[in-house]
Length: 118
Image 1 (cartoon, rainbow, N blue to C red):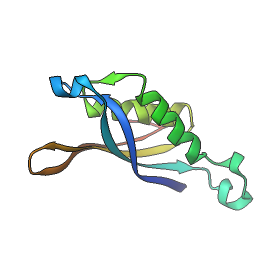
Image 2: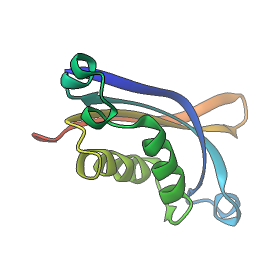
Image 3: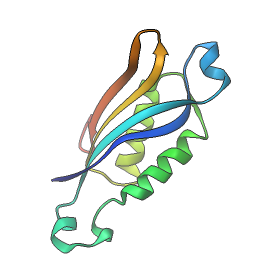
């Protein structure tokens, strides 16, 4: 299996349980790695792979539409989007809030799933 990665994607999202987090969107840093068919590298055809530009647009659009209490739920949502809509056979995601706690650069989660099981 080949992989595509999107590293340090910055997205605006409504996420959090604290009052200050429910007032306005906050910037998240997100990195994704997802499996793609080997045929993409062999055939040199965009139609044989997952278009990372389309993934970025879709994630930004979806995260702008809803509120998540937890980063875990937001991550699961994006993972399911990748598995179901983009048909990625495997997805690993890390999502971090930046500067939300004094003296802490980032706080986040990592999730890894495959289409064949959780």
